[in-house]
Image 1 (cartoon, protein in one colour):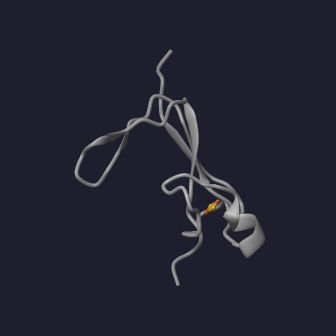
Image 2 (cartoon, protein in one colour):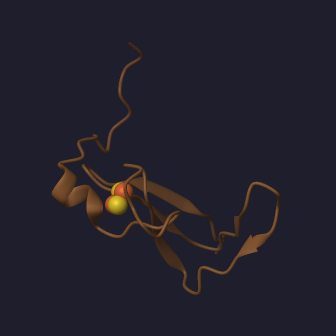
Length: 71
Ligand code: FES
């Protein structure tokens, strides 16, 4: 069975990464996620970036899970 990394945009929330991913800084240094599934902030308000800390909920962040059509 082939293992793949999946990225799931959660409605009004983070990006969920699942699978054998490797998280790197912009300069290529490895970030130890410590688990096989992580939630990455996409609202910009988390105090523990790149991870989600739940701040999107109180901020009322809105985003679909589906791709949005180009403007
Ligand atoms: S998406 Fe959850 S804090 Fe940004």
